[in-house]
Image (cartoon, rainbow, N blue to C red; front, side, top):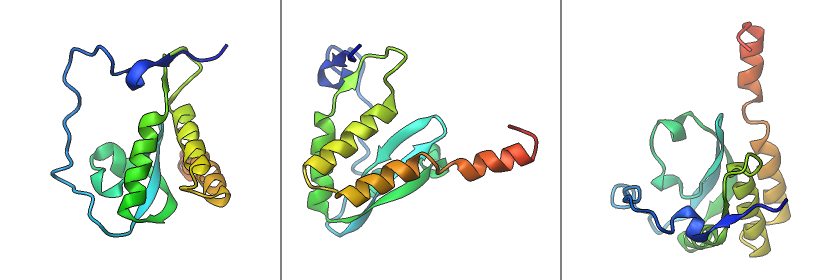
Length: 141
């Protein structure tokens, strides 16, 4: 069964305030910077604009690079990300599907190439292998 996508990425009709915008704390400056995909134990999510990321979840996540990109390309990634649908929770669809859809759109829009797409997908699924291996050796698996 196809997922049911939520209007406005699930924001339509919310009566609570959105998360605080911290752009004033970490401005995206007009220089070439690395764009990374962060992978946490709870799921995969993007930190497309590294200067805007902060907090424990970001620092504890593993990352893989999509490459060094200029500020116009990073803004383009943000715009493309707003076009990627968020599906209604159904026990099947999750944030990893969203990341794959975003990477697909970045490829379709020629923001990343096939090699960057393949590396990101392959790396993301194995970034925590060493952590799990250490836990298994210590008997905490």
